[in-house]
Image 1 (cartoon, rainbow, N blue to C red):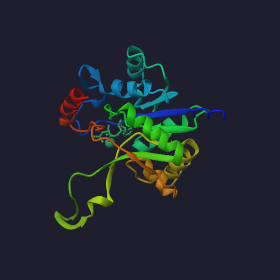
Image 2 (tube, rainbow, N blue to C red):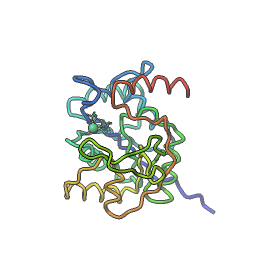
Image 3 (spheres, rainbow, N blue to C red):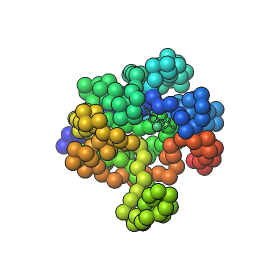
Image 4 (cartoon, rainbow, N blue to C red):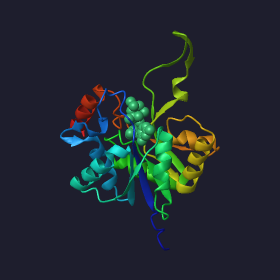
Length: 232
Ligand code: CTP
Ligand code: MG
């Protein structure tokens, strides 16, 4: 029997945020972890994954030239376009998705701020997305989670009914395009791309996440990333 050809997979890397929680005048994506910028580490993870056919970087207009240079100096040859993002993450992702090749069958959306994603996680989520149409990596919550209101705890949430979602979140191209256009039309405020897809009533498969796949958000995350990198 003829082996089914592997699908064309695009990676969209939203990198158009303003790093406000990292501190004033800092671009967290250019901070170094063991001498390599966060953004370069993230892009290299996708460059080195054999299932990824092209990479679209979405960034602020002022960073386009600098990021093109960064791609050149780290030989990230799969980057086909660097496009301008929007005011919200969802807008930025939509800009990236629109720039994907017409050949694209699956789109993997991955935060530029998650530089420690492993090859195993990328490949595993791609395979789950091929099987189920939509998949995202999740990890169980370690802390107990409470409902709060006006400064007081008002209730509990069963820990086994919740999980923390990471990226890459991977979808069939037509599903994510429709979901993000819908989110834009309805002006939905979303923090991840699964939420846009869930809104359409499409089920997203729960793939295996990784506690090491942290998002660089506040200054201590850089130290944490250095430590985690030493363990790999
Ligand atoms: N992002 C984006 N466009 C936006 C906002 C965020 O492409 N308008 C990207 C960020 O660059 C980041 C990812 O989405 O790679 C996750 O966002 P987050 O960690 O919140 O980064 P920032 O928005 O830059 O940080 P902050 O919220 O602290 O300002
Ligand atoms: Mg943000």
